[in-house]
Length: 139
Image 1 (cartoon, rainbow, N blue to C red):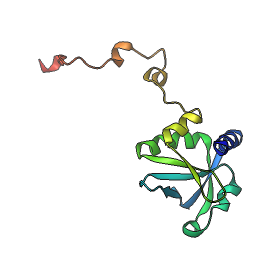
Image 2: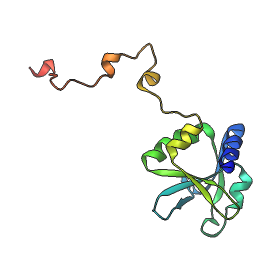
Image 3: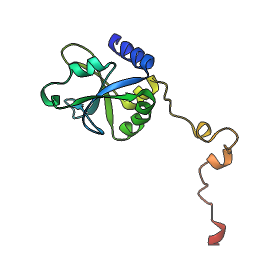
């Protein structure tokens, strides 16, 4: 877990992380033995460059702001794509679910109240509709 702590500290300090990109918006991915997919991310440009080989030999290094990455983890989570953090010199990774990575980076999922703001939040509005509710226009 030391690698993960170092990774998080570095990307928080720099405000960005690095990926390998085949073409705009198409990033290097890995799959584990259970066919789970992960986007490979790197704390530094040099770390990313060191991973360009074999299947990824035509890829280029691209950076992404931390804010953009945190936002992107929502989409990755919906698509069930995790994050692969390098964890050793021989290509080992730490597979991390996107939602967990977002939480580690401070991108907590917000409640309805936080999303709309205290002054606009209405407890009654946030409640589910009663099953016996009828629209007045339909009567």
